[in-house]
Amino acid sequence: MTTTSYAVVIGAGIGGLLAARALSEFVDDVTVVERDALPDTPGPRRCVPQARHAHALTTRGRAAMEELFPGFTEDLLGFGAPNGDMQADFRWFIDGHRWAKGVSGVPMLVVSRPVIEWHLRNLVSALPNVELIDRCTASGITTDPQHRAVTGLAVSVEQEEVADGVIAADLIIDSSGRSSMSQGWLESLGFPRAREEKLPIHLAYATRHYRREPSHLAGDLGVGVGASPERPRGGLMMAQEGDRWVVTLAGYGKDEPPLDAEGFARFAASLPVPEVGALIAGAQSLDDGVRYRVPATVRRHFDSSQLPDGYIPFGDTVCCFNPIYGQGMTVAALEALTLRQCLRGDHGDHSLVTKTFLRRTRRILDEAWDMSCATDLRMPFVEGKRTARIRMINAYVARVHRAAATDPRVGAAFLRVINLLAHPTSLASPPTLARVLRAQRASSVHRPRKISRSSARPAAPVRCDAR
Image 1 (cartoon, rainbow, N blue to C red):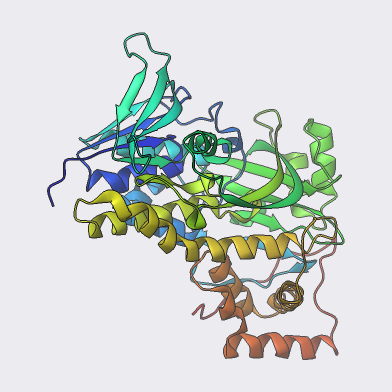
Image 2 (image 1 turned 90 degrees about the vertical axis):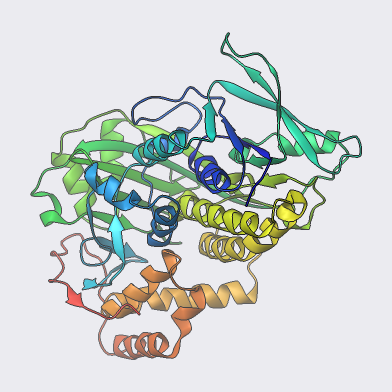
């Protein structure tokens, strides 16, 4: 298809880069503007403070990136990203239960956020019709006189060789994230502000990195400890490229993890499992602690708002999830695939792309948002409406976690859901429901396996059918 169009992407984070890749197949010229200075090597940057913390790239998210960039997985493996099975090679402690080991069939690739973004940036920069401009701040949207469609993006540029001005555009992808200014710009043009859902979660987390030794965790790739209503703190320790551990400790409300080395270690030792605290106590620390706070999760309902043709909110601009659940990168990747589908069907007429994109991504957002909110509402101090449906879901999920302590197939089913490989309703499918009920009946005779400070290492993995 021949086109004579131009697109601008606001933000060169992971979402913006994935959107630029989708656009590059259908648009003559794509410009990505980023207010931050973009480094030549992998590393955190000022405008992405969350990049230093543990990030989970779900199986479905990685598959979507692979579809956009064939060979992406092999590239990350070449950078030294550890990989394995998410159940056989990882230790899970959820709701006070140590999950049984098993081979889930859900592959796991553990790699740092800076490496993912750096590699995506290099791949996008190599596209012949895409230009990245850093130290360039978006300052407003321009439209036609009737405000029916976008015509460009006003920008302010720090670089002396580039003048401030307006970049012409038929499409503007707003991937500027939680701090997006676009709603204010649209209001100044007469468009109403999109309706917002907000769930205050009062989450804070802290992260430090440690040297990883071959003997650590007997070769396992990490430990995940879920917060519970009784103990609203948890942690995630994951192997990383470069023989490192990233350890992110999280707490809700007043359970905020300290940054200093001793306080961080004490918080880790307070988790209801011995592994994290024990490893930190004997491992070589590689850096100082960094903190990130998430006061609330936010969803903006642009799908029910009036917008100018060609303006497409994307990624965190639309929905900011609780980062503990690792949904952000995956949702952005699925949105990029949806954007590509919409552009493939518009035959050069971008007037309907905005509405089509928002309609098609609503289901993706509904699934991820509902899972995130329902889980957060288990915490008694999180302010939000607990409907009968949410209470019923959370009660059943608690039974799923209990069953996963003795039945690896139940754990595998849950891992498929959190990797967005299966819909949450699959946990109530007849085979999984039967296993959950069987475990519940057994627990009336035998106490379910709870975590203890002296827990021995789990038994060898049991192969299970993850379908």
